[in-house]
Image (tube, rainbow, N blue to C red; front, side, top):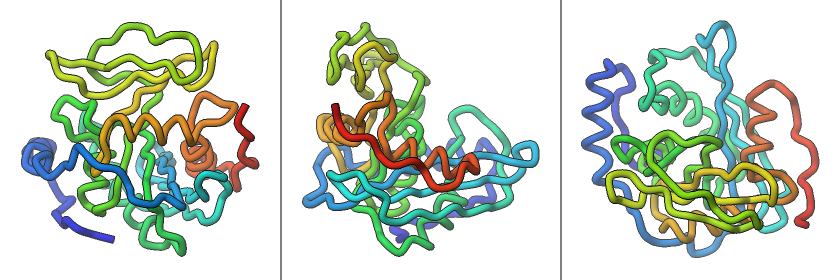
Length: 229
């Protein structure tokens, strides 16, 4: 499941230079031809941040029922540096992805993609490495400015930085804070928003994120997915 390989034994300066080189490989348009499975990824940390617990949960689509999941535990070799979180998390995520029995057609990453200072967040990085369509779905804003989206489910406004649209601010449930959606790889922003909303049921976060987070935090098998309102 590798289209691009590179060393992970990098200094922060070298990691930034690699992001700047690899961002040209991000495909910012397109949509998956047929999506039967969607995956969520999340990474938790133990032992003072020294061990990563990387979880991948694969759900059927559009039913959003769990069909496969893996948690990989791996020692962390890269320091915590804002904007470089993919270098801490992706090595363990790749180990988890390699152990899946069911390969996902689309991956929703817990984090940003194009909505990143160098336009190469974890969703872009993972998508380029694996060659799989990816979407960044984040709980909070990293960069950019936006108006407040409308209060209804599905309301959205552009997330912009220096005059460029880098993502969308999406209301997934009335009366809750919005989420931040951006492209990762091989999807357009409109497609990314559509799938993020389609994977969200009664809760603010997509079911992909909820399942992966529970697994990464040691909560065991995730609760049954909630039916759409």
